[in-house]
Image 1 (cartoon, rainbow, N blue to C red):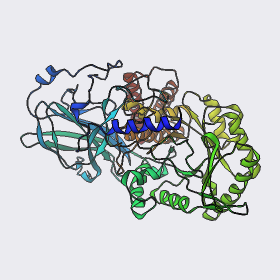
Image 2: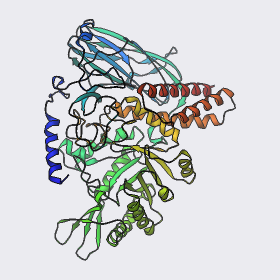
Image 3: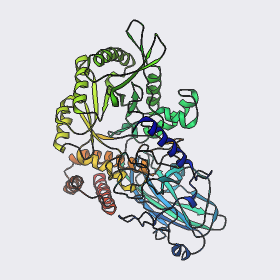
Image 4: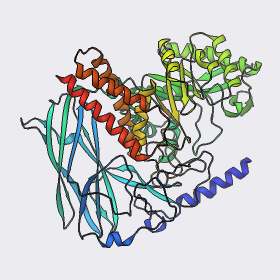
Length: 604
C-alpha cells in the first residue's frame, strides 16, 4: 500500500468513526446493531435483541450484582438473578472490584447511588471514602464479543458492536427504557485496617424507585504493598504527545504537563515500572494517529559533529518519576522500522531523513557519537543504571548487528528486546520480552533469572486469545497476571497505554488493529474494565509471590499442602487451551480460593 492510499483510507475511517455519535459521551444506540450473545462462545453478527424478554420484565428499577469477568450488553436483559448481596475477600492494601447492573423496561430518571461505611462487629470501619463508583460507558468495537478470529492489519469489520469498557465518574444518570447501565465499584482496603468481617449498604434510587444492596468484605491479615513497591514489572508504552493532541494543547506546555500528571498516576497506581522514551522520530513507521516524536533532538552541525538536546526527555522522565513510575527507562530505538532516522541539519535548517542500516559505517558513526553523549548525560542525572536501550520486533540479523555496536561502545549499556524467542539473543539481553506463543520453556526463564536477567512477555494485536481488546472477556485480562506467575516471568508488556484513535471515548476502533489494541486507558486519566482487570491479575501475582515466600518457612503440613496445590494450579495454566471463557473464569476462581485459604492458614 502506498502512502497516498493509506492517507485516503485514514480520512475515510475518520469520517466513519465520527458518524452517528451523540453529544452525550456515548454512541447513538439506534445506529449501532448489537447482537444478543448471552456470553456464549459462538457469536452471530446479525442476531437481533429479543423484545419479548424486555416485555416480560416487571416495570420499574432492576438492580443486581454481577460478574466482573464477563461482558454485560447495553440492550440485552441481563442474565442476573437479582443478587442484592455481595461478598469479597482481600488483604489489607488490596483493591476489591465489583459491578452492579441497573436496568429497566421503562425510562428512569436521576438514578443515583449512596454508600455507607463498612463496619465490623467491633465498630471498626472501612470508610466510604475508600469506595469508588463509576458508570461504565459503551464504546464501538470492530469485532463482536469473544471473537476468536481477530487479526493484525485488519480493516474495520463491516458491522459495529457496542462493548462496555470506559469508566466515567457520575453523580446521577438517566436510564433509557430497555437498556442496561453497569456501575463498577472498587473498595480500596487501607493497610491499617484491622483483619475481620465488615459490612455496609449501597442504596440505589431513581425519582420513583429505591432499593438497597448489602456489601460484605473479609479483610485478611496479610498486607499488599503499595503499587510502587510491587515486584511485577509492568511496561505499558506511552505516547505523551497524544495527550496534547487529544486535548488541543501545546506539547510540553504547563497545561500538557498538568494533564500528564493525572494520566501517569493511573499507570503508577497499577505498578507501572517503565518510562517509555524516544531517541528517534516516529520509530514505528508512522502507524499511530499521533506519531511518537523524538524526545532527544539530533542536530548535525556544519562541521559534521553532532549535538543532542535532552530538554523534552528530561522533562518527561522527571514527570513520570514524580508520578511514581521510577524503576526503568526504555529509550526507543536504535532500530526504527524501515531504519529511517531524522536529524536537523544546522546548515540548512531542514530536517533530513536518512536510512542507516544496523551495523553500517554510517549507523555505527552516528550511534557511537550519540551513545557517548547519552551515557554522559544519564550519568549526570543518575539515571544510567535504570536505562535500557529498546529494540522491538526486528529481524535477528538486524538485532545482532545493533547489539554489537552497542556492546562495542560500552559494556555498561543495558538492552531490552521485545519479540520472538531466539537462542542467539539470550545471553546478550538484560531484559527479554517474549511474544506470547513464541516463548522459551520455563527452564530458560529460570536460567535467565539466575544470571540476574529479567524476562517478561507481551501480547499485541495477536494472539486473538488471551488478550485485552474491548471485545475480549474481561477474565482474560486478569488471567495474564496468573500466567506471568506460572511461567516465572518478571512482568508483562503491552503496546500501548494510550495510542488513542480519533475519538477513543466513544469509538475504540483503529484503521488497522482490533478495537482496544492500541490503548488501555481513556482521556482524562479514566480507567476502564480492561485496565482494572489487568491490575487485578498483577495484584494476584504479588500475592502469589508473597505467599510462596511466607509458606516456604512454614512447618505446618496444611500450609505445605495448600502451597503444593497452588503450585500445581499454576503449572496447569501453562498447558495448551482453547480459552473457553467459562474455563478461564473457573481457573481464576480456583486460584483465588487457594490464595484465600493459604492466607488464612498463614495467619494462624
